[in-house]
Length: 275
Image: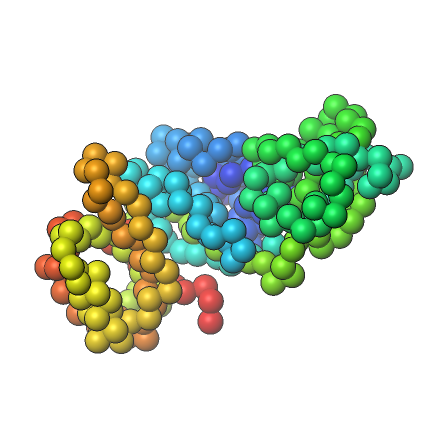
């Protein structure tokens, strides 16, 4: 039986491509038009696992997703990096001058800012998904409206690409995490990355002390993101990613951080997708 993988978006989206690359083509997609819906499908058991974008090399972190992972007690069991390519597409027979509106996911619009600025006559409209916009243009025969989406969406929904590779920075990459309700047992020899969440006492040098532990235990800090602790004003939680060569080094750091932090949780231990 094929794995049911929840994705944000529909066929032709970047999440769809990641699901295929990570799990292979023989998966059943659970299409979700929001990250909240993605989490719901995973928590109810309708989806076996989920793919979720977490940060982009241009636009930065998708901050609400960190809270979704933690608040729902989900496990990060893997990650995948995807080079992002944005294309402007519309119904065939039109030129850019004919386009009055461009619809796409807010992140895609942000990543194509310079291109869109050079076409000031076009109104920008945020939508829930890149591929869903392409599908809607085809379904409703919408002229004068274009989508920014992956090239595969133009093929799936019979649209014409009006401009290719319109992202502001060519080396544009998004990191996706793979989520499960249950922790997946992975051999220690295969684990060289971990995602952690902790809360520190609000006093001078508390974060510096943690960073010293990370350095002294030969861990490489690849990400640090702070979020407010909603029920405790002016208190912050830290979400960090660390990589390491030896699991024993990580275990030592983890034991120390559990003592130093007011709250400490391992969100996932998995294989680093960036070599």
